[in-house]
Figure: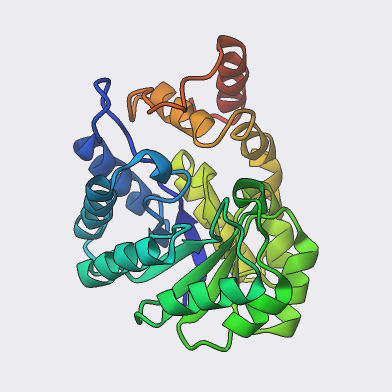
Length: 288
């Protein structure tokens, strides 16, 4: 259902700090032209923590309206309050999203039963749910047994794995029928080698065609071609995380002239040293 290459798309801002709607639409067109299978607006890469509710909903609406069903939209509507996640997900469902990305509730760190109840409540709304396991951000892993239990819900269809563990992917693939999507560009190929069916990518913001081709080659069993792309862009995959995501990828897009190099506090621009390192990596990869 959700196999393929999905872009965790950035939310561009103007220099005055507003959401740059026109640049956002341009980015969506760039992604579609690059062969991406879908977009994930307002995830971590979309700076969801600093968007207010109205902006959050408008960005999702804009992605859906601009895409015009040409690609799938997995709306980032997770929260650490179940009531908030329900409200955001209802809006995304009614706006026409294809699925919802649901991050593990952060900071309050619910136990296993709380996780099952939280994700099940969202899934009961009827929109297909992609669980999002990213303990480095949330402080809470989705235990394998919880994922297995949630996979019994007909609307829990996939899990984004951003815990850096190929072993977890093997466990999930062998123990339940969730589709697994890599949440780490540098691990997309090894995760797909053991059964993942795609990626929710940061790197595809700047190299959509390469990421889409890598995933499509792997899905078709063309492993040599997929490996060649992995190795060609591996250093770029790594250097997009030399600072807090999404600072490096937004810096790269700014260097490409696609957005302003603008953030909302507490995020801010990269140091000059890191920026020069990233620029060198972009040039080596023929992105600039």
